[in-house]
Image (cartoon, rainbow, N blue to C red):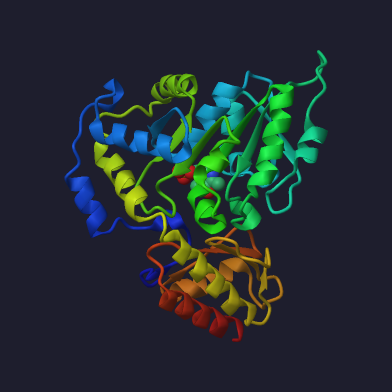
Amino acid sequence: MSKVRIDLYSDTHTQPGPAMREAIASAEVGDEQHGTDPTTNLLQDMVAELLGKQAALFLPSGTMCNQIAYRIWCQPGDEIIADVTAHTIHSETGGPAAIAGAMMRTVDGKRGIFTADQIEAALRPSKRNVPRSALVSVENTCNFGGGTVWPVETLQSIFQRTRDVGIKCHMDGARLLNAVVESGTPATDYAATQDSLWIDLSKGLGCPVGAVIAGDSDFIEQAFRLKHLLGGAMRQSGIIAAAGVYALENNVERLAEDHENARHLASRLRDIPGIRLDPETVETNLVFFDVSHTPFTAPEIISRLLEHGIQIGARDDTRMRAVTHLDISRAMVDEAADVLGDILRG
Ligand SMILES: *Cc1c(COP(=O)(O)O)cnc(C)c1O
């Protein structure tokens, strides 16, 4: 296997560049557990302001953000309503059951996006023998839905409905800033429809580690206790928070380039026989495509691409996912498409 030169596997594979490393090296640090790490505090203030929330908390990962929020909003036995594709269901090690003791009730959205009417239908009646609906969890952009962007109006109507029945809303915003840049909807407008939400620093923003969750002060106070409980409280975390500060200042607007490159990749894939884009329309930086009408399975295509130093992932034997990010140029997209075309045309 040759060295990976064109890494379309995930936007988590971004490498910190020289300027980000410089910010990391010169970070002012303190003791995060005692609230005295100035760079972590700065990052938290920036995210609270970005999302228009009272407070924010730096955490080691997006997964911990989701699991802490679920634990705060749910009692054991409660139900969390989410789309069938939700990352929290498929890729977080059963965390909702293990940490919140909650059950996941799925709704079948369109590419991860569901409606207030679907929530209405999924809400439980208040009866002694029935689980209690406690939380609606949305993902923006929706990863396994295809990088899809939620219309803010849909979130507003869901929020209204959850307010009426007294349950909470949480957003997995691993790629929220992709949605913001693509839709032009301000982050604060999205955030206003949620009781808690977070952004990942280690996806398209290009940081080595970290995520930041936001909510009201009481929520963040509880989140800090759980962060400590789960072993996520840190010390001189300014070393990694500095990358987040740098990324928020420099790497947000450029996400538009990733979306352009993803659409370019999609247009190249459409010309390759046997490949079907799924979904057809690429909204942000994730490109999913089906290869069941080619002579190869996804794992076979993956290993052939790797021989050329190109890495692309797959969800299963037929559905592949290519992700654009700050280490992927237009020329790399073209090279990947050329090689993939050659492989599939034999
Ligand atoms: C990556 C991802 C997560 C988990 O984030 P980590 O920082 O890798 O723990 C959660 N939700 C979605 C939609 C993701 O893509």
